[in-house]
Image: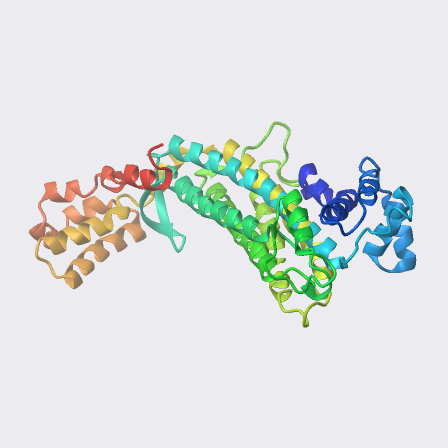
Amino acid sequence: MIPRYSRPDMVAIWEPKTKFRIWYEIEAHACDAMADIGVIPRENAEAVWSANDAEFDVARIDEIEAVTKHDVIAFLTHMAEHIGSDEARFVHQGMTSSDVLDTCLNVQLTRAADILIADMKALLAALKRRALEHKDALRVGRSHGIHAEPTTMGLTFARFYAEMDRNLTRLLTARDEIATGAISGAVGTFANIDPRVEEHVCAKLGLNPEPISTQVIPRDRHAAFFATLGVIASSVENVAIEIRHMQRTEVLEGAEFFSMGQKGSSAMPHKKNPVLTENLTGLARLVRMSVIPAMENVALWHERDISHSSVERMIGPDATITLDFALARLTGVVEKMLIFPDNMLDNMNKFPGLVMSQRVLLALTQAGVSREDAYSMVQRNALKVWEHRTDFKEELLADAEVCAALSPAEIEEKFDMGYHTKHVDTIFARVFGND
């Protein structure tokens, strides 16, 4: 990803020097394990670790690869330059390139997942704080973009919290599923390397041995991982879209923080645009873009081909770096977001009383009116409010047929806003527990 949408800790995971460091540790731990079981001399394993403090020269590895046309061989050649060709003769013994490449990729993905997990927890904390802050702040709920019934701003934040909490569970599962390694040799049969080597290497790298690999780790694991990132990105967009709608001039119930000196338009000085959440909508598309290629990587020829390789070199860094940035940006938006309670009430009363139509409908049916007649009675009065901006309650009180079924006091009672918030605490307890 370009620096504009990148954060340094996640970028560092995907830098060549990090990758080569992981490759080195895989090879060194494998040599340790082979020495432990008597396959190679102990002094050769120790010689490999003598390069532990060495800085691998990325440019030199690239130079070698330009000749060998093979990245792992280029790296192994460079290792031998550090520790000596005789001392390095047992490095990579019985292993195949995918043992290094796949195990390294999964180390990188688990490290990336750890950063994303921390991002998710920070976002959850911000959503929870804003939900509690505005738990009882009334705003109109909308379906199809049209006024429906009252809800609260706290419930809006709470539902986003619940969604992101589910995503955190998915991400933890995806991290666990991707945290496997394979040091099983050509076509995965361990013919030339002892399974104990794989167990040792995986333990040192914080991975689990892949139960059965071919020459590669099965790509259904990676498909599930990137699919999870795609779902999280869609949830980021879900929050972003709501904030963008809130900030519309005609709504203005909430808005991104507008900092001192910030400009909204090169042409119109009055503009305050929701640029951060619009950006998040775009970034979500980029993360989701990785999902289909990851799924298509599952089907490889026989025990291995490399059709997945070019895909993963791109989507691994791009999807994780982008989502890391997006989660951090969304957290900042939520933390600083401006809320306008007066506008929320003004919007709800734009068509006075209309949001109570269902209460009146139900009251009429409970008073003995058929549902069809009750619906007709309520709707004809509601349409007057739509067309003439009159007061719904006053229209009902002037309707003889309605008043024949309901007393003025019964009609009045149906306009109590507290009716719609009486179970907010119950919902909050379901979402946040006893907190």
